[in-house]
Amino acid sequence: MRNATPDFEEFVAARSPRLLRMAWLLTGDPHLAEDLLQTALAKVWPRWEQISIDRPEAYVRRVLVNSHVSWWRRRWHGELPHEQLPEPPTVADPFDDVVLGQVVAAAVRALPARQRAVVVLRFFEDLSVEDTAEALGCTTGTVKSQTHRALKALRGRLPARELLLDGGRRDGA
Image (cartoon, rainbow, N blue to C red; front, side, top):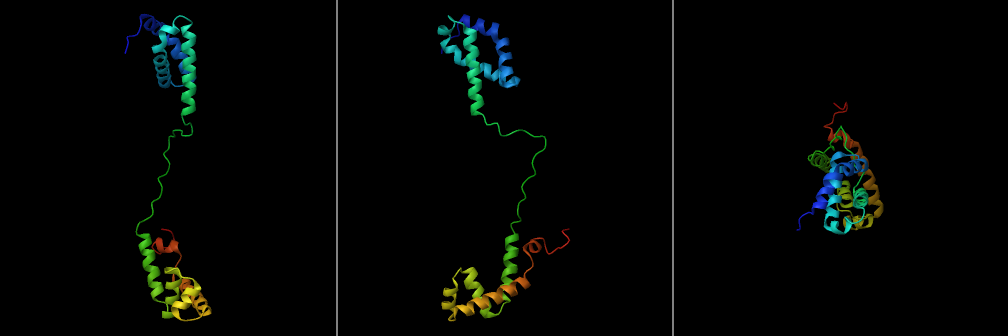
């Protein structure tokens, strides 16, 4: 890496305050302005011998503006800091599904044998009405009627899911 020429060092010493003010006006933030100016000067320094002959300040200003535009295009502006943190997401109790499963299993076990078989084959084994009828050796009409009766009985025995998971409290306390 070569050393900076005296011309470059003199230019930086003489023009940095003015260029820093320009960078601050572009970014609106003093720390970003310093970073922007440093980036622009780092881009200019390797080509300083070619630039210093012509109007170096105009060239550096142009590099400053172009660097700012490329930063602006790359940076995502959708996230803004807030004083208040958002509410943490509510995490479901891992035992809710276990409790619900136990309550449903007890309600299914309380069904008559034929209705229990229909419910298990249709909803737990995911068989069609026809396949269930074949497995039980009955007609599809019998499977449909037994399913209807079983679901009606289960609806009467099972409280709403919210009540199950809330410990059965109706007052919300």
